Image 1 (cartoon, rainbow, N blue to C red):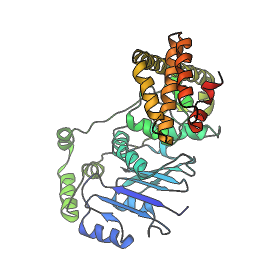
Image 2: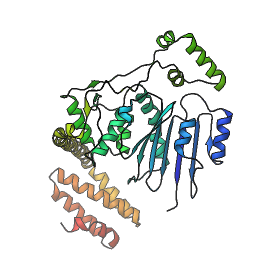
Image 3: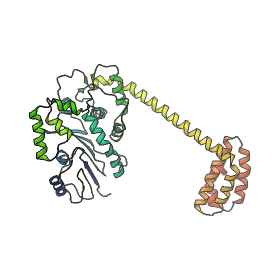
Image 4: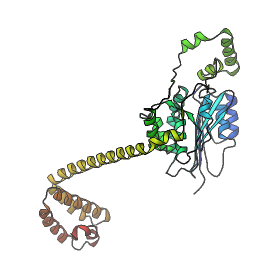
Length: 374
C-alpha cells in the first residue's frame, strides 16, 4: 500500500492576506489554497512544515490523517478560553500548545483500525467548527471525553474540575467525535450518573453580546483595537475579545470539586450494566422491526405467488448465472412465504414440477440444494 496523507485547515475568523497565502504556497506548491482554507494530499511525500505551526499562524480548525491510521484534529481557541486546570493533563491523544494569543488543542489517534477515506475526513471536518464554537462558549465535554478514554487504560490520571455538563444528550458533532475517537460510552454514562448525585460546579456557558461588550471598553482599549485593525487589515471577534479581556478566564483557585478515577469508579459497573441492557433492548427492537417488515413482504409475495412462480421459470429459462441466481432467490422467498402461511405441501407440489422442468440445469439445481434436501 502506498503512503497517503491528507491535510485540511480552515480559517473561521477573518481571511488570509496575500502574505499569508504566499507563505503557505512556499510550504506546498500542490495545495489548494483559498482566502480561508488550505487542503492537500501527499503520496510518498510530506508537508514542509509542522501542522501545529501552520494552525497557530493561520487557521482555526484542521484535520490530518494518514492511511497507516494516524489522525489529528486541531481546534484553536483564543488564549484564556479554557482554564489551565482543564489543560494541564498528561494523557495520550490530547495535547495543548499555548501562546500569548492562542490555545491549540490537538486530539490524536495513533492507530485507527477502521476503514477511513477522504469522504469520511470531509464529513468529520464539517463538525469541527461547531465543536470549536461550543468550546469557546464554555462546553468542554471534548476534554472529558479524552480523559475518559485515557481512564479506560490508565487509572492514575490527573484530576480535572468536576463540572455539571450534560453527558446524556450529545450534539451531532459530539457524537461524531466520540465515535471516531472510540470514547468508551460506559464511562460517559458513569460520569453522567455521578454528576446526577455528586456535588459539582455549574457549567458557565457564555454567549457573546456585542452591545454589552462594547459598553465596557475604555478609550484606550478601543484605540488598541483600531490600531490592530489598521496594522493587520482585519480583526476577528475572538481576537478583539482576547485583546480587551479584563482578566484571565483560566482561574483555577475557584474549583473545589474534582473528577478523579476513584470518584468515578463506584458508578462504572452499574453504568456498564445499564448500557448493555439498553443495547440489548435496542437490538431486540431492531430485530422485531426487521421481522415485521419481512413478514409483511412475505405476505405480499404469497398473495402474488402465481406471478413469482412464473418469474422463477422465466429467470431459469435465461440459462445464465444471473438468471439462475434470480430464480433461486424467488424460490427461497416463496418457500418462506408458504411456511409463514403453514402451506408447505402446496409449495412442495409446485417445487417438484419446477425441478422436473429444469432437471438438466445442474447449475440451477446446485443453487437449490438446501430446498432439495428437505
